[in-house]
Image (cartoon, rainbow, N blue to C red; front, side, top):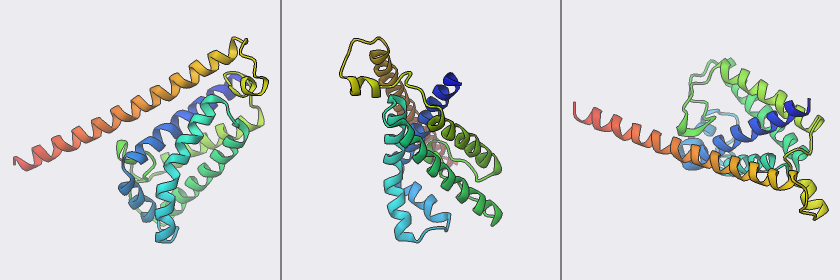
Length: 191
């Protein structure tokens, strides 16, 4: 069970890191997606669109590093439940739109697959605070102040590597989308 929780923690952190960074790169598009859900008033949609991506990134980093793991996982569960509610509500309304889940890096039509993905992520996010483990966590390192344990530097190395890898993937994904968009414009403009 401990390994499942650890894997779940890293999966959640990867998804939230990728999602948050992708949205930060395309805030105007994400604001449009949030507004398009027609759940929140426009001024609240704007606040959510600007606040949510950094919150996702910070939550992802905290999960990777194992800092405040239970509290962050509960916050992630609440966010995922809200996202899932918004998806289901708009699917029931019969609306066809981009879900805005991963920004412009990975545009995705609103569908029941997104709901299923979120349900799996909710299950993972519920497992983390219920059965969290100190493996690959910096929390014991900070509490004890002792740097002599092998697990603590290893946790730091894994955490930093995961964050750097996630940043790199997000940057490359953004570049790919931009170059594909430019190629589409060039092809469309030359006809």
